[in-house]
Image 1 (cartoon, rainbow, N blue to C red):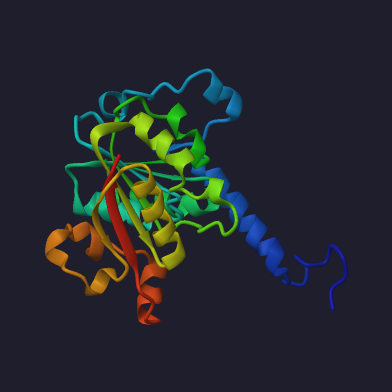
Image 2 (cartoon, rainbow, N blue to C red):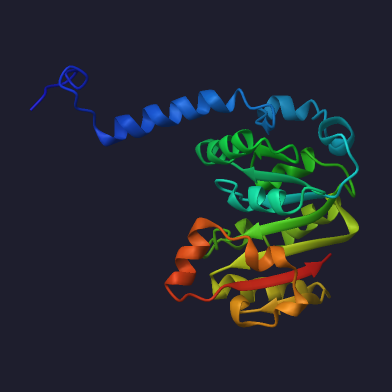
Length: 239
């Protein structure tokens, strides 16, 4: 059995060491992606240069701007970008190791309509101007049991979204958590809003009332949950 400091000599590496080294490599590569933005708090306070002008100064077009919040590895963001090249997509997550996977995919596939932001969701008002966002996707968020103010569909977050979305903006929610789905339904109804579409069993609903991106773009875990027989809830509404 190797002693302390002998791991490399004996070709033995603890799992924790391997994972940490891999993450460090990914974090370094993240710095090379021109479509990944990860500003420090002090930098953000000075003002983000692309706020209010993403299409003009980054994407170079006037296409609709769509966000995925808590995008993880960016599977949904990338899937949507490939399906809709006439739209621009930005995935937002706080975990740099997760974002690395999405960034690698964007680079490998040479997608020009995708960007990522490493940030807490409650800071997105610092990145986008009033009316700049056309749609928001909330895909399989942490249900935050017992922590209502952290739920991405709580009133606090809806007010943030309202400030950056255009008047016709649409919010999509996909979740395998029935309680989170019911909670969100209650929030929007308490605010006098009506769901454009709502189902607690997406893949056994009338698909004529929803767009292809809702059912054809799936995350890795969504496919696993479907194979396990779990029901997927979907909700679409405007603010």
